[in-house]
Length: 346
Image 1: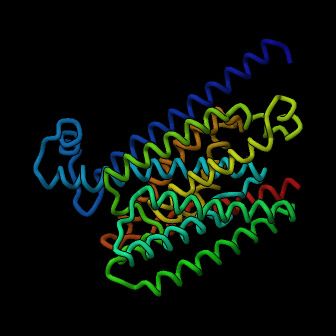
Image 2: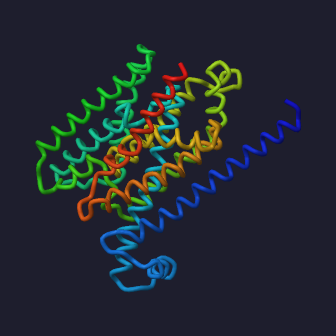
């Protein structure tokens, strides 16, 4: 390839990246407006603008926007991006496009540990802070991940790995259901709803905590973009580029587990986002370069989860669907398509 052809190809790629990110940005803006505007109480756009930018309006409008809708929407954006990023990291670690926090049972492990700690704390009349939720979720996620790593070393077959992950998920879900049943108490009335996955009941303290946790982890992930790109070309190539493979793998697991744990701690388990969104981002951008795919996956995950949350709370209002019900409806067909396409290429 001569220099002119190379520069032409690079220019087309940059134009595609710019177009895709512009589309993501417009989609993000549109879904933000829809999330704030649509609900049991519909608000005019003029009232929304005054309430957000000038903090003016009637008390009811301000309360709906600042206390209910904005925290929920921001959390959906943050946690959706975090879940997509966790999926991308797991797919890099296992070198498997079907690897994701939900399918591999990592979200279920985090859910089980949060439920256990939550019930113990409530029975002892102790508070349950955001720090305790994230720490317990991280421990559960790491436990499930370590088991999957052990299985992956014994079994290289992709289907067997997925089955092992699904079985871990079933075991953790069974333990969680048992804990919920024996802890039927007025103090944990929201535990059942949380265990199904929901962005309801978010508040600003949770938003600030999640912003710090997800923000720091995302920055660390971006700092690893170069070694991730080298690792995608093979362990041998990465090692020749100076990447410490053992340390690199540990960091991938820690970052992906922490992101999945943060999501599960605040919103419960959310299905298929970690698999479907990185696939969508890579397909739209036409590349697997981490420096491009990482922010692309994050923004795409934010838009995807905000859209699914909007559908979850409005499709059968006033009854609210669990977020996993909606993400599964959109994400599962994408995963099936991935499997069919992969099979047709063999």
